[in-house]
Length: 330
Image (cartoon, rainbow, N blue to C red):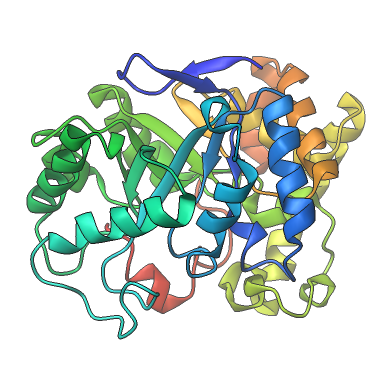
């Protein structure tokens, strides 16, 4: 597996990572046995960058990865996240805690669920609603100095917040959404700042939460218990407009003898070595399809053709429902 640098840390990780959220929530029913086999297959294929969070399945995802990595911890670069002001086992009332003592508590609970003595990359999952970013990052840096975490990451924060955070302690990675249908914020604001500061850009949902697979022809095609039903882009008034974008993707995929999903992922991979896509799956079949995208070569002409088909701002509907959009640190 090809490697890419994790910002200016001196550490490299697999060019393709594995997002593990769907193993525990959001996309249909759980299948722990298949999920563990998928993690093992990822490691066998050279994928070491695994992404989790305390929020995913209210701790289930970290516990699952702890099981999957028994005896193989040294093969994985494990990232997880914590969130202030959300209901979970650590915070059953969902109140945002003032002061940053909760940062250490959250980390210790994640380590206990994982059954590990350190976390490689520890993220603030969403902007802390009550504590200044400087204080939060200082608390995270204390964990780094204690050896409980190796590197600090931020997820879904804005450019100004990232700059402020980087003045307190080294920020290894920013995680946010990036795909052909989510280009505007990334390309206009966050990627330029990450490049300036030497921060890795970890791209989640590089296939548009499955939309760019072109497998779903209507919202009704989604599994019944699927969180995408709540997302504006997948709702009827927006879905039909967004579906008009897919023929161009499908046509090029046919020419290149790959799937639309592989082509969408290849486009992200071609956008710069500082970008680390973490497509999510709980199935070995889709994992192997994703890995094959690393072998797809795109010319400058082909990249430009895709970007004309998916111009910045073309997607209909917001990325999340309104309450979740308010949590994004913009």
